[in-house]
Amino acid sequence: MYVNRHYHIWSTVRWSRKILLNAFLYSAAVILIYEFTQIPFYLPWQPLSVIGIAVAFYLGFKNNSSYDRTWEARKIWGAIINESRSFATGILSLPLSADVSSEKKRELIYRHLAWVIALKHMMRKGKTWEHNGAIEKLVFTPHFREEATQGVIPEITKYLNAEELKSLQQTSNLASQLLKNQSLELNTLEEAGKLSEFKHIWLHELISRLYTNQGMSERIKNFPFPRQYASTGLFINYIFCALIPFGLLDIFVESENLHYWTTIPFSGIIIWIFFLVDRIGDYSENPFESAYNDVPISSITRAIEIDLLEMIGDKNIPEPYPVENGFLM
Image (cartoon, rainbow, N blue to C red; front, side, top):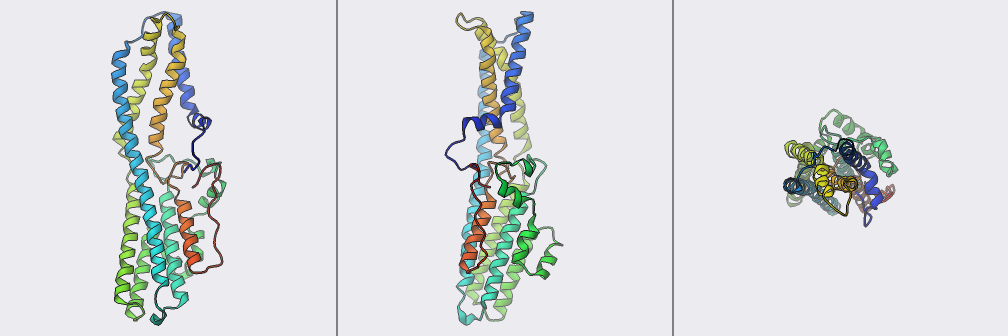
């Protein structure tokens, strides 16, 4: 996620430079053909403007829908922050008379941290509809690249005992199994009389909400923005942008003040703008794909980790992820 006040204009141009270059090259090719053939193949601008309005509406719908997915993902992980703090506070507030040792409380909180980390790694796995850029290409965020290449097991090893970790490695959904183990551990405490019925129900409700948050994250991750909308938007954008030089040529050929060669810069800029808007929506569809504009779940996970470890007085507290070149991952 980019956290500076504004993207620099040159950063935007660099991000979309292939689009800009191809737009100018295509416009130049159309004008060169006209220059050498003098065939009046230009088109009236009025019908093209109608197509442009339709494309703009469609791109607006696509971008709004993409933004909704990103914002929902951020709200889900905001809820995970709140539920994590509530869970840790609930465990630490168990009365001493309940005979729940400090080691047992630490074990429960450690397991919760393992769940958050496991969920983060689940959300970072690539899908066929995502862009799946190589981690090595994220040159602006070296700390995140280092973490992403390690995998989930090295990160959660310090929070789980060897037996539990070994059993979890055989499962397909590590995060779900961790919440199940947490629930079973609470049942054991309640049956031993170390946890009141009210506190037991309250903690189970928290775990239920964590399951809900995990499920909502999985829904966004595992169900793509409908391909028919994404593909149709791209197709009609290509059709409209392919016609732009022909429409502008009709205007500039008849102009007394502007030469038809000015079609090249104007067409290039218009094509670039339409494809830039489409590209922004395209990169907002998948908020967990480890791109520069995704939801910073690595930083959110690290913030939860720091909060909970400070609550239990742990000495080995990791540093928060830094903002690197304006990006927070």
